[in-house]
Image 1 (cartoon, rainbow, N blue to C red):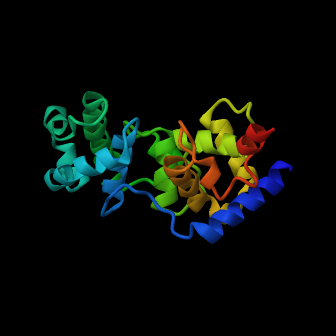
Image 2 (cartoon, rainbow, N blue to C red):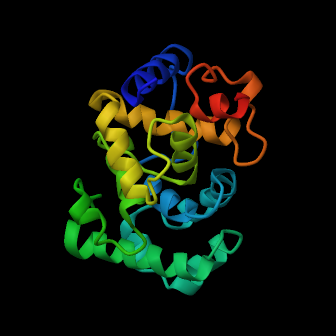
Length: 214
């Protein structure tokens, strides 16, 4: 089965069986989502969601966060991975939002990655979730699942390579949703260890499953 046909079948299955696909991060506005995504780097969404309510009460907008000292922010996020760096990034991000973007969340990749703590993956999440742009944030789940399924090549070594290959075969209008399909499938079914292949609805088209049965 070629990659185009495999991807078409997999996308169709997701459309039929995974109609609601969205981020599991809890947020009320685009600023809160940006903060949560920065915190989620190398950390679970569950842990972030336990941490952000108090953080958002204390720093409800960019102005309040920009006025903070990293040491104070640290106290709210100390249970998150790499809290020292992330506290500095959050304050720096908020300060740049105020000085460069009038407190608004940028709408382009080029602008977003100028914010402290924001790389390509985080920027893609914001562009996809907030602005519904056809961007694919490649985290560890997307990287693993797309290669296992065989919708990207096994030789793809970087998130950017995987991202570009996914754009090639997934319809543009479905890219924002496909990002969540792959993440959630990787989180709950196609797990890093002991993937649930026997109960996976995608096994008919999955390269990993087919190879394992040869």
